[in-house]
Length: 264
Length: 67
Image (tube, rainbow over all chains, first blue to last red; front, side, top):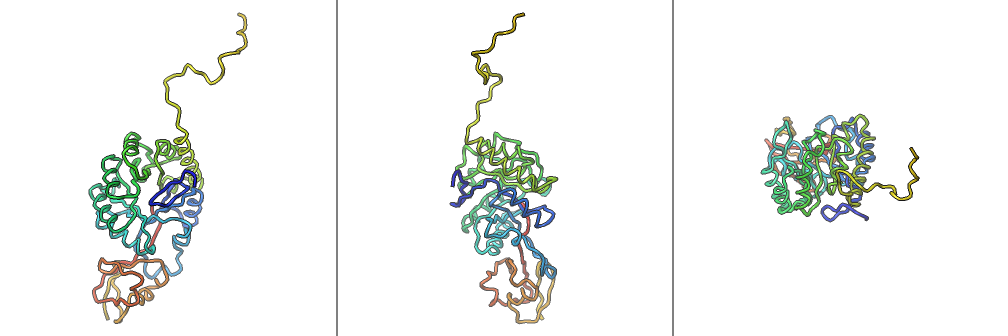
């Protein structure tokens, strides 16, 4: 596969990972995921409704695990213990599936990651054989710590979850990209296509998003836009951009052979 | 009769009852779920033979949309 994204020894042609929350129904979820071209989709683990779900459609029917790589998350967990417990349940639910997204939140208002708890959970999960993709603050030192623990990808926020504020600190992302050898994916904060393109142009290995697609007026069209933006940003990164200059004394058209100026 | 809690709600059943039978009573047979009893996972392979006990706390979860 040309220019594949490799996570835990598996190759993916798409560098866009998408969440499956906040959609109107499973039909819309599926249409948006298809349009995004994503191969990895995040899911949450929640209590089942007892006694009222006999013929209720399930997410696993809408997005068959045979076609998509599921990435169970720990959304809503505020302690390492809860996150670990959730992912053990996810592994049982998905028949031994090991690739997971760890996120331990610090507070319900900002959803900013709690890094001490995140590091503790990562340690336990890696020991138990999980392949951990980890949502984290955009701190290069803690990103390196997560890599040292054995996480298979680090996923710093671009801005707060669900904020759509875009890439607030490209400099920190660059520091992380310089320091960390495992894939670095921007997770959270992307609002529109240009944000995704900027993340990829910086050299990020991928982008994970949910709200930017699900909360768009037309989620399926936005999913298409995001697919293109991630591809365009990746290609621009690989192509190597021209240096920025305040002005240029080198126009793009020849300076020779111009017609004679009209006599005054 | 024994009393157990499933996803935070009390349920009574005639003993003896295995977890497999419990799932069928709750109309969850064949569903893609995971079962935790008193904080410990009960693997699918052990559902049939594991009997529920009075006071057990069960969490039964599914995969749902999330980001």
